[in-house]
Length: 266
Ligand SMILES: NC(=O)c1ccc[n+]([C@@H]2O[C@H](COP(=O)([O-])OP(=O)(O)OC[C@H]3O[C@@H](n4cnc5c(N)ncnc54)[C@H](OP(=O)(O)O)[C@@H]3O)[C@@H](O)[C@H]2O)c1
Image (cartoon, rainbow, N blue to C red):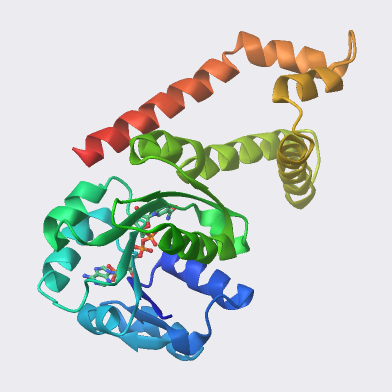
């Protein structure tokens, strides 16, 4: 089985790097095409097949990942739509706001299409990818796609109608979490900590809290209650966060993200 990437940018690099380090594919089983020779040279040096022509990538791959910006997807689909050899190939799109229907309209109703939403922590093998297959993908093909994407983190299979909310919850949310870490670190620096130490304390608290939620299965409200001793420091901070609308502010941001994702899909 061979996999090809159209576009050699941030997400493609995260996925190819993760697949190579997990051993899901050998370098010679991976192809990548990009308009930029510079983006390709780093992969060529690692033994990956590189092309400046996207058609070559499609021809030599069983699974093709569309890893270009959403506004480039229509051009790529127009470029490859007349190839007759793609009937058995699987097309994975990672592009935000590009629907399965849009891809089927270009490649044909029989095309095997999987819409996904990964996130950038894939670069450190801690990604989260939501997967929505179209009706032409078999159970076995879905297992293959899932296994490939699990080489860079976790996966969840969801109906495509949830893609906008998934985008807000795991695709875009690393940005909100970075803002939280940065704000906490700024306060640490304000109280005299060095930037390195402040960032480490804040980021490790986020990492550890996420692990507590995922590994203990205890509801986050209960975990919060467990940290709040009566009249203590933590409950003072929690009450202050409630006063300043912390939870409402997060939920408003998620509403804005969902709306934007839905507008992009129109
Ligand atoms: N980054 C994220 O957090 C994230 C998360 C989830 C999903 N995504 C999705 O992932 C996709 C890729 O995002 P990215 O951040 O990896 O973008 P990126 O870094 O800009 O990578 C896209 C690459 O495609 C190249 N390219 C442009 N036109 C091309 C064409 N016609 N044929 C082949 N290659 C072409 C670009 O070259 P030039 O730079 O020279 O134009 C660039 O190297 C997007 O659709 C995005 O919605 C991204």
